[in-house]
Image 1: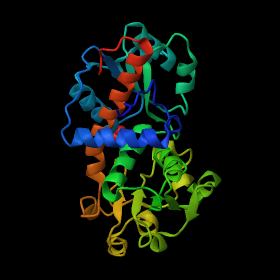
Image 2: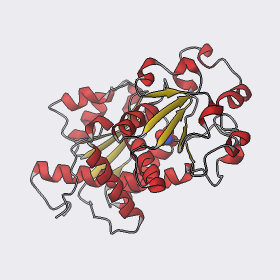
Image 3: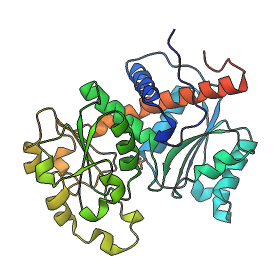
Image 4: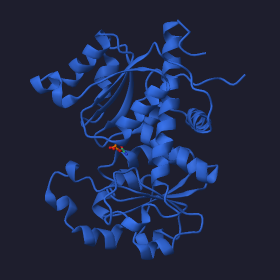
Length: 316
Ligand code: CP
């Protein structure tokens, strides 16, 4: 009988083996294909977002509702965070009042280490993004989208383009894609191609890159993470011409090539606005896949808790 995936936490792609990634993709695909959803009505979940989000926050919320979880509202702008409460104490509070699963986004990289080491906190943690560190649910939905398009990872040529240095999406994806056997390329402003990326793949200019790769993953320029205005010392138009997917470059893409972007998209900067919904674009498919992938992640977490607490009955 097929072994079902069970996870206690998901904070980094380093938590997952290749086999576990594929199990999550298969399960998310099954949900997308209409597989019946388990009912997790005994599970309390809260989404603690300390950084802005539309996709991650709301697609977790839809996924939680589809699994019949009890979703406890949290808004950092009206919570006791405004009175100076720390992330640790906010999480400790949700844990103390009986919330089982916490989806957290925060600007501090690896904020989760302190929480995982605490004997107080027994709730499961899902990292919805930690600064420029990791974004595992985004990586998994990206992998699902690539797998849906090509049916494999080994030998695929994948380019990650743009604000590499500040991108948790780039970091999570390059690590797992390399383990899965993809060939990695990078582009964008050279200053953002730091040595950690050079270990994973080859830098090429955009004009050389676009015709070569199967997957063109564009990244948002993350002005909010730049420490000085000189980090992005170009106009939107200059960036688009040098590093963006222009309509002229689109015409040079390989016939099988797909365009990805985690969004939000800066239209006419990373990608020409007219290309966001072009035939090669998977940008909105990524969002749809994200909801199904988050269902698969939550299901695996609930199963992990059931096994750990030895009170099976939440899932079978
Ligand atoms: N891709 C992504 O993480 O989007 P949000 O910031 O809207 O969640």
